[in-house]
Length: 133
Ligand code: ZN
Image (cartoon, rainbow, N blue to C red; front, side, top):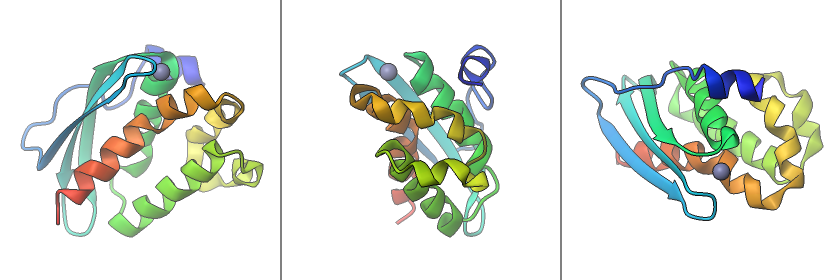
């Protein structure tokens, strides 16, 4: 699952008419991501990411964009919180179907150095959504 998203990333590229664009790096691993988001109503209408880095950072970004597209701010906040809990080792989250393919990253919790890779795209999203004010 992780390699599939790494090799065939979803929502990769640039977004015309993006409302927010955020660049974020994970210096520990060398991961880089640029996230572009278009808002609509109370949520995310569309988003794209570009960047480079390890398979975990890129797969997590691909999965995240797929999951949050079309969701409201409240739903996205809840998903981000749940995913963070999963990365902090809360294995009860593994059965939470709302996280979709992101559950494939549950094993990352055993490797604290890689947790930052998995959270990079989510941190970029949080930052992009904060620009809405
Ligand atoms: Zn990484």
